[in-house]
Each structure stands twice: as C-alpha cells, then as structure tokens.
Length: 261
View 1 (cartoon, rainbow, N blue to C red):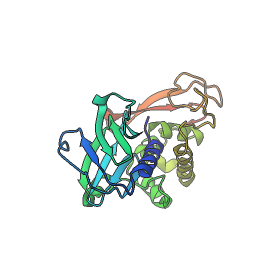
View 2: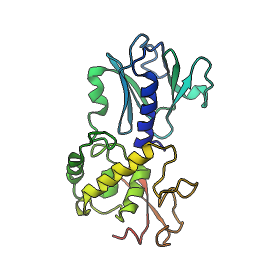
View 3: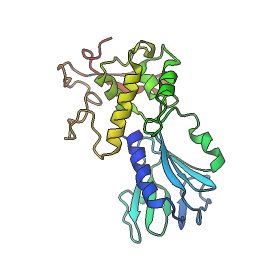
C-alpha cells in the first residue's frame, strides 16, 4: 500500500531522471488534461509532500496522488516494456533518456505553479522533510484532545506521510490503544519522533518492515494479522473500524493486552 515512504522513494527516482532536463513528450490520459502539452518545459525538481508527488517546471506543477493502487514506473528509452497494462496508464512523460509512466493514479492534475498551494497547502508538516517541524506537528495533533489517536495520526492536516499500516504499527510499538484520546497520550513528541524514524528507514529500502525483519510474513506486528497471536504476548490480534465519518471508516488492528485502555 503506497504511503509516505513509497512516494518519497518514487520522487527520489523521478528527480534523478528528470530534474534539469527538457520534457520531449507529455501524454495526459485523464479528462480535463488530455490536451495539455508541456513539451519544451524544463523540469526543475520532483518532490514528495506526504503522500502527494509534485513534478515542477517553471510554469506548471504535475500533481499526483497514488491512493490505493497507483504507481509511477521509470523506463529507459528507446524501447521500454511496461510492467502494467497500457489501459491503466494515466500519464506518460519523456525526456531524451527516460520515460515515466503513472499507472492507476488516484489523482492527477496539471496546475499553474502559483496554484500548487491549492493541492498541498492543507497538509501538516511532512515527516520526511529535512526541516520537519516537529513542534508544529505535535501542536496540530493536540488541537483536538478528545479525538482518538488512531484518527488524529491518519489526518494529513496534522502531519503528512502516515497511512493506515503505519498508524496501526506505530500504536502497537508504543503500546497505545487506538481509541485512546490523543490528549491522554503521554510523550506525544516521542511518538512523532518514532514515526519519523520508522518512515525514514523504510523510505530508503524496498522492503517495508516494522519488526526489524524483512522476511515474508514477519514484517508487521499487527496490521492485517487479525486472529493471529501477538508476537509479544500471544493474545489474538483484534480488528475493528474507526472513523469520524461512518462512510469512511478505516480498519484498525491492535493487541487487546499490549494496547489495553
């Protein structure tokens, strides 16, 4: 599942291949942008902001969000063979050496540079930003002290980059019940620091892990392990749903013993 680490790594690879080069082909395959042509535009940089990816030229920004199924693939020209079906391609970008294809993107838009803030201005501090504003992130989390910590951490307006898998795993690692009001969480700064450390470690490797092991089936403590024994105490992992909106509840996993109320 794409989260902040995946998007950071994607931006890193696209940045290396495209920054400082001229776009020689742009093929946008979504309604509203099919006629946009950025050929001749020089790519200034490619960056991630939480789970958003931004490819910038002097005049425009190509903004994408992977959502659940999206991915950017990088292929060397001249005869690339795509690893996903062509009908799932939403955009194709090329320079003289590389082709980048965005497949099954949950969101894709082309905005004037001055409107970049419309796309990502709502986000809280980015956990993978070199100048991460930890104090601001904690203050945002504390602004609604009665909100369950599970939902507060998922809210990208508080801090950007964490998805469902990360929040479940981090709460287990800190022995925090997902329903606990965030105002009752001690050492919130420590929780944020742990999130930044784990996200950063996974951003720099392909195999995501929370336990220290990258062997299949051993990478997670609780996520998608409902009914299986807790790796710490043997208690069966529980599963439930939480959400501020009943139509958008998120699946939650926890150990009823290690994360007791």
